[in-house]
Image 1 (tube, rainbow, N blue to C red):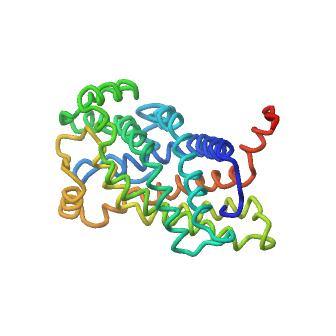
Image 2: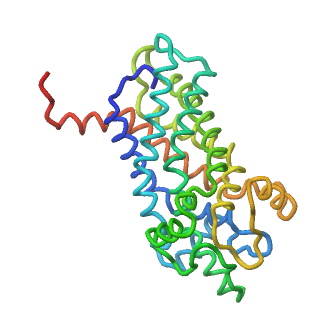
Image 3: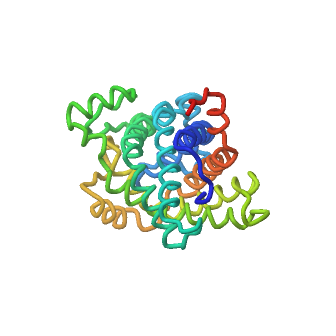
Length: 312
């Protein structure tokens, strides 16, 4: 991507379209990931991703698998657009004669991951509450327990209700709870993903100057995405736990990243940090594969070509 110059509007359109398509395809798996990561020892409702999805459909209906999807579909456009455009921007300014060292590729990924948390943190904050509401409701019915009091009500709130209540009670900081954990997840993810994708994609190029075929971009995006996703999954578990406002009455609460790590290690063991890892890989792989195909096919440029051009 360093030697492919694309206008900023086209980058934003490409990132937005890719995000919308990807989220629509994989959101139920993402919901299963959130619920698997949040359940703790002694309050487990689901044994696997398929078990979670089956039970969700039975208790909440088909559209129960898409709880929180509206938040993602609304905010994924700026989030993916910022991520892809920022990486391309940093790669362009760090490159010399179109070439980048591995360190500079990682530095560009670091910049992209840092930029995206502006949108990612509130998006994840709202999405997690909506996704996990069904698990808490099922747990309450099954175990005859009450949900511990949290910052928001437990009865299937909407994203707007959550936003208003968080802003009223905690201000803008309420939407950015877990910002540190989000940075710890997204910066390493981008450091791994973007250089790995670029190098895998270069292996599939037919010649030194031309772009790689779209299927190579797709496979490279899937492989790089799933690798990076599994690598940072422990931090994703921590982030999910920290951003969950409501819990079952027997579930731990956490005061910060170190407290969360300590309690998970003590009560659930190190394997808990891999909860939902395969779900996350299944979410991220097609998500970034689709993103790179849209990006490299130039969908944004095609759309912009229909707009009237300004005369110089």
